[in-house]
Length: 133
Ligand SMILES: [Zn+2]
Image 1 (cartoon, rainbow, N blue to C red):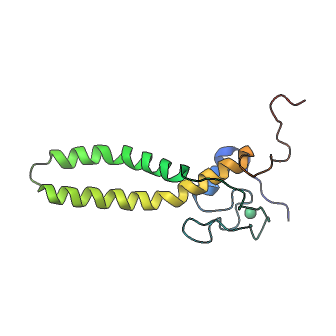
Image 2: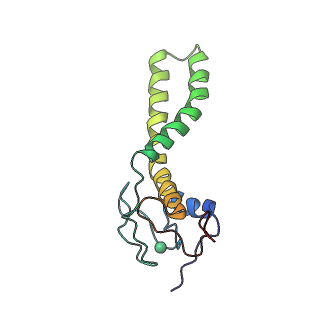
Image 3: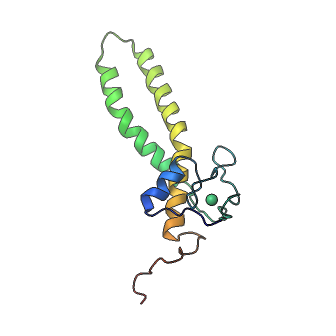
């Protein structure tokens, strides 16, 4: 079967973000919460080659922090809400958002590494290398 290869890096990252195989888009990328499948059952892409490391949590924390900052300002300026309620709401929202962003962030980073031929991934067929005729 010829895989339905993505046409752009954004299409590949969108597939990874939604938990689909970035190469073919037809199978799940993750076997468990943050553990990618060893090999795609449809297109046979080896996903053990990625080296996402701690970049996905970094991305998830950056996004969560930027979304939560205005929420915390609004909650903090609402004088009718007791401080302990504000803290419970803010911490709960931050943890829920962070946990829901971790897998999508990791999928997108794995897709980016695959697209760019980074870590153990081979350069994509047909991709022109810079400086190579
Ligand atoms: Zn696949």
